[in-house]
Length: 423
Ligand SMILES: [Zn+2]
Ligand SMILES: [Zn+2]
Image 1 (cartoon, rainbow, N blue to C red):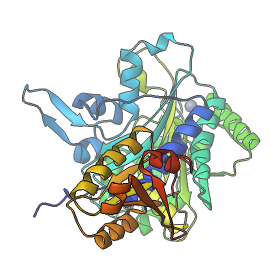
Image 2 (cartoon, rainbow, N blue to C red):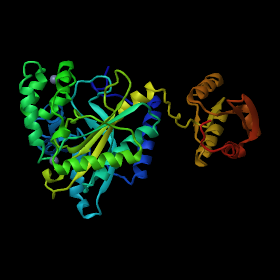
Image 3 (cartoon, protein in one colour):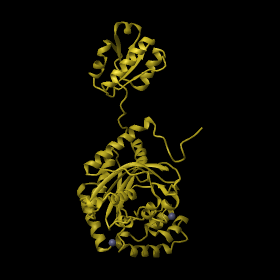
Image 4 (cartoon, rainbow, N blue to C red):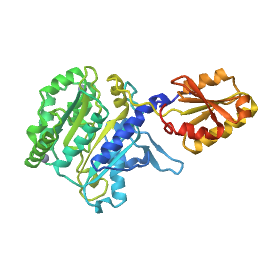
């Protein structure tokens, strides 16, 4: 028997209310803040991600689903959204629009990662990206959108952490201080971190190993090394964020995993013990568009990991509304009644009443059981006598009452009680 590939999952009908809920809330919050939807292909030129996410990052080195297609093109399934949206921004002349251009998207992303709770090889994100504006007010707005998204879902006890990791001017000084500090701990840090020491020292602060965390606690702080511009930007961001009333903390060890971030980075986590996995986060990436061949253009964005949102919705006992169920189930006994029921179900659907019909000529008992399983509000029963009289029996499943109505008034009777309701 086949199984879904490792690290992927089927979203079954019973899972769909969560996804519908997140789609609806993401769309509502995005438009509340003036973000417009964009959808980009799930695969792109592989070099787009090498250029943007960065050579030497885990994503590019180990996790990309990169392949050559039959025409010899090097492609990759998208491991994240920002690069694709920046590519689309340049390709479609969006730098000529009034700035910032504010876009959002939702969809699947792909990383060849070790599957574990809340981490999948095909995962889903809600992303917002705001391009063409360096104003720290925009940083605060993007963070606010992220926060409101989780809040609109009803999630509680979340913690928002922000940090500034500086810019090309001030980061080298911080980097040097970091290298000097960690040079004294090369025998104590984990194997991964020794690699980071050579390739990407900022990520030393990111390590989740206990000993590395202990060492990281004494490491130099990014905010002590900011240049005047970065310090002013960070201070304005904090003031703007405070004005929104959203509670936040400063986490100087927050650096985020991608190469392209500068200045503002942020992350949102559940406060619950043992639920360390981030629900989402983002940051500023002022050098990225230029890296992709555009004019120097600032940008900032965030990604919400939706599988983790579902885990937290379930953990917090938040149950989204059930999806609509059929309003009517057409049950029948015998061939003449089947033909009458078939005409009736067709009429119901034409006037917008969600209706299903029993198949296979099963017993009335079996059809009633099926109607019950589907959650139909009404069962319409047509037997030999109803066909002769041109009538139908309508059973209200909740009240367990039944009435007989003329067949040609059936649609009206069922529609009159609220079309396509949840029953
Ligand atoms: Zn700076
Ligand atoms: Zn480590």
